[in-house]
Image (cartoon, rainbow, N blue to C red; front, side, top):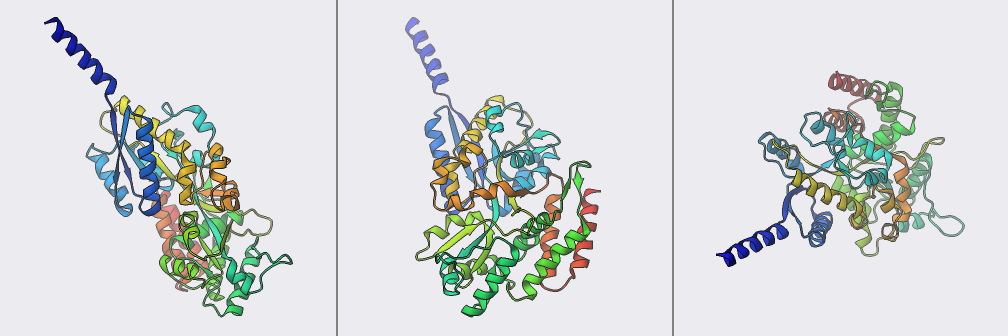
Amino acid sequence: MRRLLIVTVLLTFFTLVTAKTTITVWTFFGGGEGFLVTELIKKFNAENPDIEVVEQIVEWGQLYNKLITAISAGDPPDVSVMHLAVLPDFASRDALVALDKYVSKSVLEDYIPEIVEKARFDGKLYAIPFDTHPLVLYYNKKLLRQAGLVNAKGEVLVPKTWDELLNYAKQAKEKLGLEVGITSEIGAMMGERLFIAYYTQLGGQIYDAKTKSLKLDFDKVKKTYEFISNLYKSGIMKTMTYDTAESLFQNNQSPFHLNGVWVMAVYPTLKDFEFGVTSIPAIPGSKPFTWADSHTWVIPKKPKEDPTKIAASVKFIEWFAKSTAEWAKAGHLPVLKGVLKSEAFLSLPMRKDYAQVAEFLVPAPSVRGWVEIRQKMWEIGEAVILGQKSPDAAAKELIDFVRQVID
C-alpha cells in the first residue's frame, strides 16, 4: 500500500513537472513569410518545453471574418495575427484582451513610438507589433545605366524628390523605348498608400489628436489626387494589376517601382536582377514620409479568461517580437529599436539601404471605421486614375465619406 502511494505521488509530481500549456495561434502567411513564421514557432517550442504553440493557418482574405465568428461563438484561438490598421475595429467591439498588465515594460520601452502608440485604443494596449512594412521605391540599376542616368563615378542616380523621380523615369522610358517609367498597382497601392505618403508630405494630417477623430484638409487632398492623376496623364505610369507591375519590374521593363518592403523576400533571389531600394522621394522642404502598416499579435477575448494561457501567449509574442531579426528576412522592418540596430538585422542584404525609412512612418490612424475608409480610398483613387472622377470631386467624396463613417 505504501509503495502504491509513493508511485502515485511520483506520477503526480512527474505529470505536474512535464505538463505543457498548449496555445493555438492563427496566422495567414504563405510562401517565404509562412516558412519563417513556422520555423520561428518551432524554435520557440524547442526553447520553451513548458509551452507548445500550435499554428493554424487561415487564408489571408478570410481571417478577420473567421476571427469575428470565432469570438462571437466563444471559441477563438489563443493568439491571432492582425494588421495594425484593423485593430481599432476589433478593440472597439471589446473583442480583444487588453495587454497592459501582461507585457514587460522593458519590451514596450524599446518600441518605435509611432508604432506602439497605434497598438493602443482608448488608452489601452491591445496588440504587440512585430514588424512594419512601409511603401518604398525600387530602381533597376541595369536600365538606369543603359539610359545614362549615372553620376561622374558611374553610380546610378537615385531620386530624392518627386520631380527628380519623374524626370529620371521619363528619360529612361523614352531612351529605352519602355512602356512605362514607374510601375505599381492601382487600388490599394495608389489609392491608400501613395495617397497617405504624398498627403502627409504636403503637411496634411489624417488624425486630429485634439478631437481624437479623423480630419482631412480639402486643398491637400485635392492636390494629392492631382499628383496621382498626373502620373498617369503624363504616360509615366499606366494602369495595371499588382502581378503585372511585378512582372514588368522583375523582367527589366520598368526603371522604377513602388511597392512595400515585403518583396525584399523575393528580389535578392532573382538571377541577374540588379536592383536598389530606398525611401520614397520627398516634396522639397518635407521629409520622405511614407505609408506603413504592421503585423501584430493579439489575444482574442474568450468568455472566461485563462491566466495560464494568457501568460503563455504573452511569453510567446514577446519572444517573437525580440526574434524579428530572423523574421526580417521576409523584407519587413523590425519595430523594436534594439533589433532594428542589431548586426543580425543590418547584416541582411541591403537592409542598410532602407532601414532609415523607419524614421518617417505614417501608420493608419487608430479609429474605428478605418477599414471602410481605406476601401473607399482604393475606389476613389482608381476612379481618379481612370479619369472617371476629377481631383476636386474625389476630394469632396472622400471627405464626405469620412464624415459619414465617424459621425
